[in-house]
Image (cartoon, rainbow, N blue to C red; front, side, top):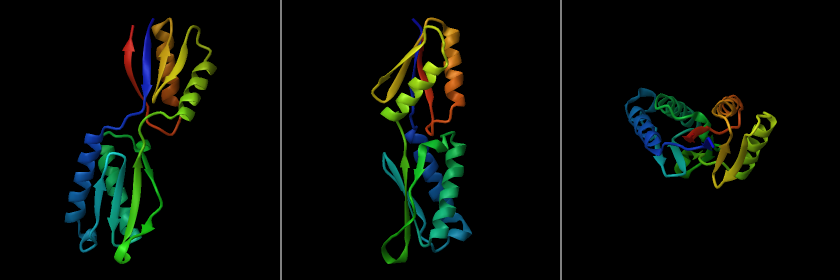
Length: 162
């Protein structure tokens, strides 16, 4: 029976490359001179630091440009509000969203059931959703419907089996 998995993943290596490029641009651009602007990265979040809130917004814009060029979806970024940091500087945390939580998994299940495709069913398995069906064409219709739906997270379709 044909099946595929719906997952939401972030390529951390591509994000790391985008952060490195954004940091390099921040050190060479004239408008970032003497602002001590930089981005630090962990596995789950990015931290933007600069001298003012205005420079934080500009640094975030540079980061978005670099991430788009690296073909990582902007839906995987969740910016938090800018906050005051030590010595009059500003800081902003940006969370990296990966994985499908229970609530989003239920939305995906509901969307697939609403398609009324004969023989197609879905089940939540951890942080992914497995969709199975009798016909390959029905599964491709389900993929097309999921691509059109805006669930707020980037979706990838893996492990397509006949």
